[in-house]
Image 1: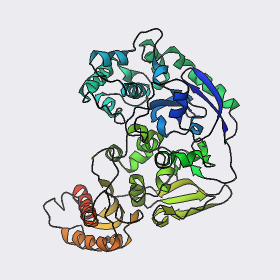
Image 2: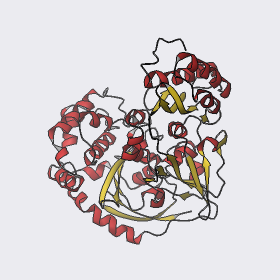
Image 3: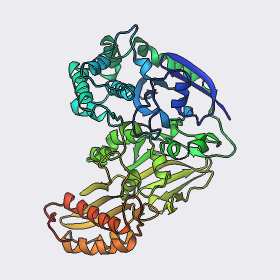
Length: 476
């Protein structure tokens, strides 16, 4: 099976017929662009990092993000600008300022990982967000170096970030500024026009008779790469109707193809959950967040999905469609067994919605994993709680990693409703929680350990949110 693919690779227009499940990394290397490396092929090491740019319809500008090419199906790069390390080189043998700083600081030894670091840093400078020394280090959270110990890389990143005052340039003038300072080649300045022309010739996406719906694919291409190549798949990633975050009559609607990064940067979501940046730090790396979608995370049906835990606490609903009819399912009722949802074979997730909290409410997310960052949870939990004085008016608590499916702790929430926030009531609630869960022992911990972890996370919710009423020393 092959489909028509049109995109720009560095400064070259690509028109080809390819299996839509061919990962971008394999295609790039088949074009003799071998600076992009295959390391882990799981989105962990960053050696395969490339930039993905597409036109933002809101401002008609090209926005770039760093992504793992080992997990991107080529179908998802239609109408985009893909940039490899070769596409960042200046004419001749002159090093650009980022490359030169890596040389100055001895930030490259074997060199295998270096292209990924250079690409990620360039993506940081191209980004329209706030640029500072903290963010420049965060932009490298998806890249691993096994030689240098990272200190020389951090020095190089901080020095190049401090050399230019990028903050005075909006996205409309930033590319010209970056070109004038030799951080990007000149051809970047005309990419918007090239993408606009390309979009006119791109054919309608392939629609197989048997539909397997895939959005981001950041887990599927790790778990089942060969099966993906041999399946008839409908890729939803480029369907703009399934993207975006909007509010209608105090209901927040999040399109299923909205990426994790887009959610974390959304003013709407940040208004609901002001502590979202701490949540973001626990959710994968920057390249993964740039590719992973809400629909993929929810429908992956992992019992330890971080995004699922948060939206369970928001008491969200999933809207399903078969392109003709729509139906709404409460997220708390969406999962019926391990890795299984109520979604039918011919349905896809259109969006998710939740009522925007109002009044005196608090939200918190907690997670325990073997590594603090870039790891899958052993147990996670989120809470949305409404209070009046010291009394709980309404509460939603989720729990992941303690059952075959992500859990909404129904009985625990029923018990806490109307109760005062004190150590006795929390202790009684935790006893009820233990009757609702059924953890198993696995690589992430024993069943008893997971029971203890969940109790600890729920205690943490209350101690963190209500420090005047509870403390770490309370015997809950």
